[in-house]
Image (cartoon, rainbow, N blue to C red; front, top):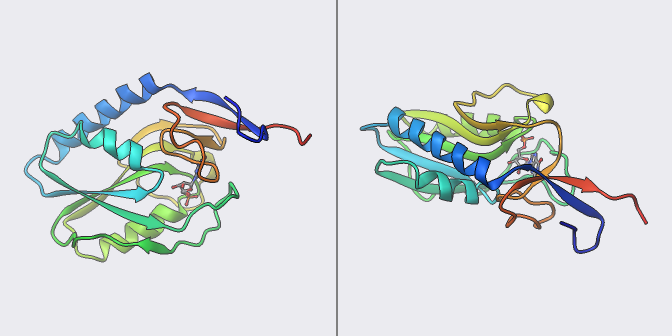
Length: 182
Ligand code: 5GP
């Protein structure tokens, strides 16, 4: 598939079928692990929206869904390392088991900050569930309790992930390939 301005194209890295199977598997594990515990899914906007929508339908437990928005990539494809809360949770997570649902962990800076931040709000526990992990670029260690796929150091789009707000609607996870400047 080609970008509107033909500056880049996409190559499928993980198919929609592979994602579907993995998300179902993650949902089953989470269901078993959180039996009889008050669970709050905290999905990170906007990239994790597609993932959390699929994942929560494979979690057979009563749960609450909340969202946070953090500063992340602009048009550039590299992390700034600056984390800022743009949208906070709607409800308190005190005494609840929090599962952060993220699209991708790259340097780990975003989740490292969020993990510590949410722990300070008095939840019963905080864990992380990420669809994608790019371990090669990690700068800080973060505990990834639930992980979908490890991927190489490529910039990926699709299944909720964007490049400058485009490509979120692709059903597969794709590598973004820059074309040579014309
Ligand atoms: P970190 O703080 O771990 O470096 O970056 C986490 C955030 O950076 C992710 O939530 C995501 O928004 C963005 N990000 C990291 N790698 C990629 C990538 O390959 N593609 C896209 N679209 N976003 C990425």
